[in-house]
Length: 286
Image 1 (tube, rainbow, N blue to C red):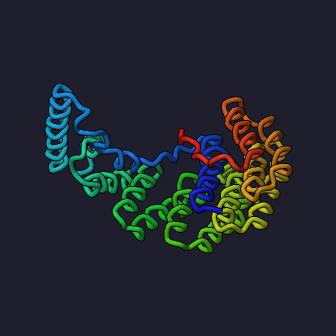
Image 2 (tube, rainbow, N blue to C red):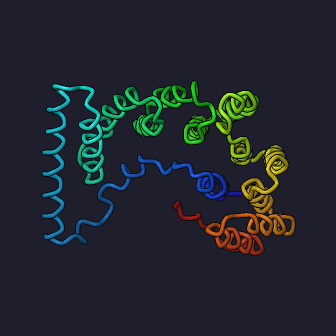
């Protein structure tokens, strides 16, 4: 079983069965950093180059303006957000570095602890430059007060797997599930146990520990029988193991339970499971 195929399975379940359905916005801002100037220079017209140069000049002027404001008012959040956006746009044009994005993100995360998006983006940026401990600390700072935040849990799990620490990822999710009851008593709905169980199954799947993965998915399905996510996850694992006949009824059930916007994608994957010789292609990320 190829590594790309296994990664594809995990990506599908994470993105399609978990992330999109629960409304978690985990399309990393860091993806923008990797999209800088990918087109061929020969493909751009002189007019396009001129436009890009004008945009670059305007963004650099805007960034300098925000920097001047922040020298006088270091906690001016309008200026911090403006500087962040300007530097992100410059990165997309291939100008600057990620450290320039980290600086305003750190301040925004500190000033807005209740807005977890800043901590998530900060962690992603730090991971991008290789500061994995800094990334982990950014995630932990949120998990201390919001242990069920799916954005942060998914980011932390991905970081631990990137560090080849699957047992730590498993422990984090198991601990989250163990404390979910108490957390949900204090703040109802703060921990989506089904989503966390599916995430736990995904970690097992990434390690090819299929029996444990199926157990996690089955437990999630029992606790939420009308939720398509754990059912789809089971089907994907069985498909990965070449058990197309066992996977098909689960795909059918997942499609029947899923919101309309996911039915076609699920049916497409179900059809592919019947033709194991067909090449495996990644599902486009929304």
